[in-house]
Image (cartoon, rainbow, N blue to C red):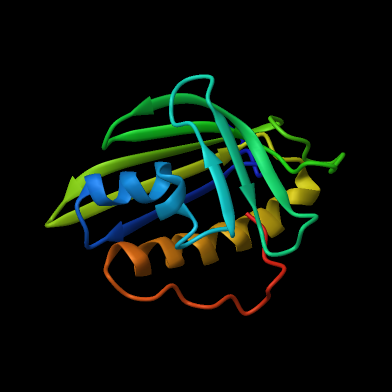
Length: 150
């Protein structure tokens, strides 16, 4: 069986309860503490997922597919004005499991074109680290590259 190289998978452990991590993933005010500068999030199936980054041309958008409070968030993903990864062209699945006083987070991002995998993988590495920082009560680390996307 061949491995699909167009799928990004990341698993991290965060020393915070799943409810805290879930809130950081779904509440617009909390979301921008670790990713983006403005978020419109309607965390329900069919709801809007819209995040604006520091670069005004960097706007990620899609729709929520599945939301299970404290456990799972699935949304479509893409970049407005981007023909390679347009809005809704890929899917992000995030699962949360209680783990030794914290949360095991598993992210799977599928449906990306080969040319978009590395930049999105780099972006998720940065932003998952920032999510962990904020969930654990620390300031979010600064990106080495202000243009980081994910």
